[in-house]
Image (cartoon, rainbow, N blue to C red):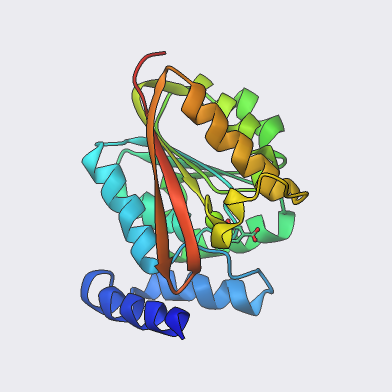
Length: 219
Ligand code: DHB
Ligand code: MG
């Protein structure tokens, strides 16, 4: 099975390059115990977000879609001491679990967690952000992209998760609202003269998926 091999390679790379850390393990265990879906980024993907933050020298990070805060913790560990990760979660329950996980990681001071619909919270945030990670419901990705650009400065990095979804992104006839949202998201990025972007497919313990990443060239 190819997917077993992908997971085995991920396990080996993780052991070498993103070894287990207690606060990240705690978050995953707590999420699972409290019934959250296992939709977190992988350790290696969390490490990639951490590297993006360091490479772009991001200080103010925005995340749309906290879930249990696993990626939030990766990113909060990557920003400098005075940096912040602002993160938005729709589910009260998920947000409560995320709060526990962030507290356990000692990162409460660096994380601003908002509970509510992202489209209600985004308008009240203070711009600009240096890096924005879009990882919530894919239906609203077109709106999240508009907000992300509005909350950007020249040079802001925008990363979107789950842009392949096992290849379903290719299905122009799909009735799945998530697929429709993703396709429109990619289309908008492709047409937006302010953005320069790429998309990278990934395989690994999370199956076949991918990221889109963009930089805001002009505002
Ligand atoms: C789903 C959402 C995610 O953000 C993810 O990383 C994996 C799956 C989902 O809604 O199915
Ligand atoms: Mg995701």
